Length: 396
Image 1: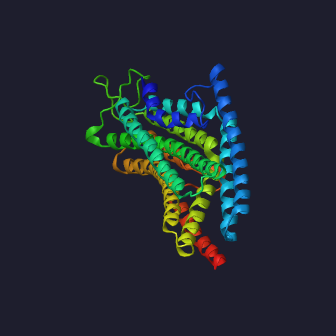
Image 2: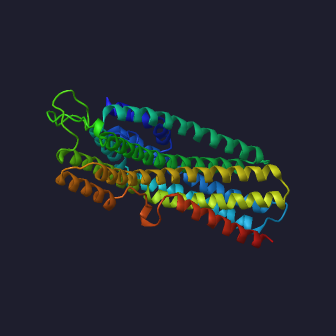
Image 3: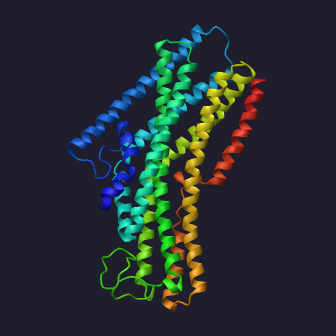
């Protein structure tokens, strides 16, 4: 029953991702037989589409150079080429990474299911409902945002030449794929955050002396902190409960490591791509508004810039909050040890749990290059402001 509920929380998003070859056809078990064949077919299909997109881009560039009636700004030309090649590189890298690490996906699912088996059933049910609603919202936001961008780009494309149409179509598809991958990563981060919140609720609830009812010692296979009416003992009279918490946190940490193995390299590439998208579209919008006096074209670039920035801020905020929840567990335990006189062995085990969290932090550092959090977002904003001034100086 739990697996079906967990499955339903991510089905809409990952079904959409399967169509684009971003996840295995059967993400909840390792691919075998026909499923593996179908996955390979999807990878081959999208590999061919990348070849077509590269040919379309080169053809469009050549066509634009030969038939352009006005001299194009060199900065615009170079930035456009660099921007599109970066997007192609990011998508190809993401696909290669998914092919190599496709077995990580079912491992993440199984690891989170292990965590859920150890938590309170009622709490995980509520989490599943919240995550199912969140997944549906994510999918609708993705479809709405990409549809708006595609409509605006299509409306702004005055030429109906097939090469031009194919170029803008593949640009929309690439942006859509990058968006899907970012939302996938955000979904896993949010799942980790929700389970850390359950741990905090458990500690907060049972640290209050008047609510120290607690678990049955007669059934060791029962979910952690399941309230029983018989053979109740006081909370944390021995180390078994703390050991169970440590095992749950260890599973969460392993799930986080699997997520970073699967999304580490794509996260680096896509952070770079989103940064360049924000920078170049902002510059193109300023250029279209001030130099070309084309408000429609400028608004299209500004909308694209705003969308990609909000997408980046969204995922960084979730990473920041997940890391904060892990720190909140430490704060909660330290408050407990100061407010309640635990037996010496129990207090020692609680401090071991604190050191475990400090030694195994829930943070998100793709390839060890940078940490995904709000300070990193602030540094990106400052870099965009710096480089936009430089680009404007080149234009003048």
